[in-house]
Amino acid sequence: MTRGIIFRRMPHNAGRERCEYKMKKVLVYNNQTGIAEKMEPLFASEGLAMVVAADLDQLYARLDASEIHLMLVDVELNDKGWDKGIEIIANLRRKSSIPVIVVSAQSAETAKIMALEAGADDYVTTDCNPLELLARVKSQLRRYTQLVNMYVNIDRIYRVDGLVIDDIQRTVTVEGRNVRLTPIEYKILRLLVQQKGRVFSNSQIYENIWHMQAIGADNTIAVHIRHIREKIEANPKEPRYLKVVWGNGYKVV
Image (tube, rainbow, N blue to C red; front, top):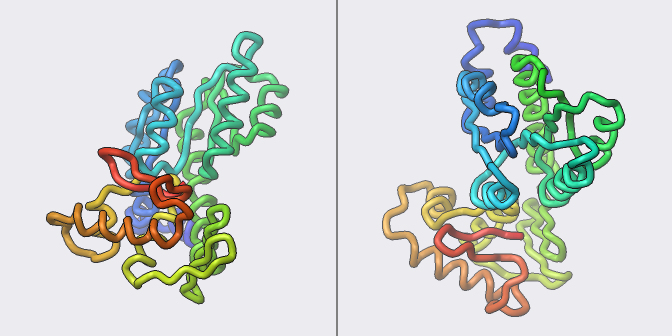
């Protein structure tokens, strides 16, 4: 919180504040009200990238295919689309813990309450000032980043159902069973578990682990992934945790 105050009070540090959001991705769903066109220039000025999903299939595909940091969800919350809109919000919350801001033409208090109870983190109407919406997006990103950093730097215990990584003790257990991984295998699994649901390509995995440009890394990564599966999966041919996304890479779910 202190850093945020310093950034606002010291203009010569404005560039540092923008760096806080650089490369963060905002997913806009169902852009019926033109919210993407309104917000894209403002997002770009803050270093935020925008990804647009026109329908539900695209929405879930975008979530699986790249690292998304916040969602702007434009849904109908009226008599015609009430149940569907609430269901979409609830499904997104079950699927991901990233912030969800609902954008709706409905200004009734009942709609706001239902959206928030379904899992939305914030709610704005479509006539909201774009600068106010930008401020709300940045606020949610700050909170989410702080929570992630606290989880990574203090707790450092990562869980995906029965798969647990204790990054302080450097141990991995599956359903209470200790798993012995090589240092490289451990780093790859930790990377995927820390960002559960995100798809990493072979090149992205290689560059994150070896900190070198990935040239001909496909076979190297495939071998390590196979070994990890053999150690953590009850049935490596039908993996529960470590999935392949054909043509894209790997993810932990």
